[in-house]
Length: 165
Figure 1 (cartoon, rainbow, N blue to C red):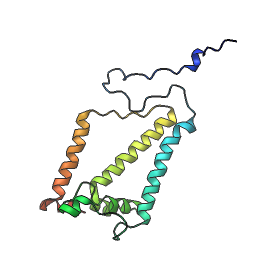
Figure 2: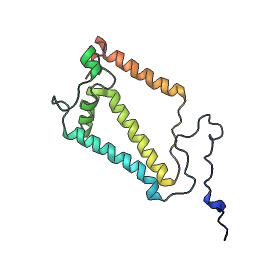
Figure 3: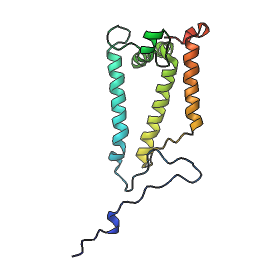
Figure 4: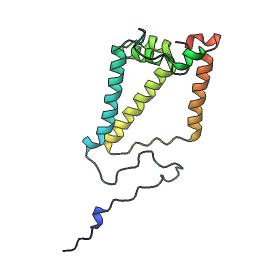
């Protein structure tokens, strides 16, 4: 008997970047096709964690003191960071009060919406057997950082008090 490995037992090398795209995929495709249940396991796990987190924040009111830590930036400087009001916003979203959520942290509500769209896209792509790839150019990440910085500055100025939690 020959104990040499068969060619099918050797995994295929990971593919490089797609033609015309400078960045490799974040999640390279698996070398062997997986079952639909297996492909949906990770997105379902992420969804379960997010639903659990929103359920906890929905049950434990952040408007009552003592349940959550205070923002260190707010405590030591008196300035609102981009995340200040995010828990109150998540609590309002969990209770279906979008107006209160926007009043607590409008940027967080936009982030929840973007996350929901990306998660739905991930589930659809996993269902169809396609890998999820988020390869953004550095300019996109710099743009996101600039939006966070501008949001932080404006919500701390007198004319931007409507954005403060």
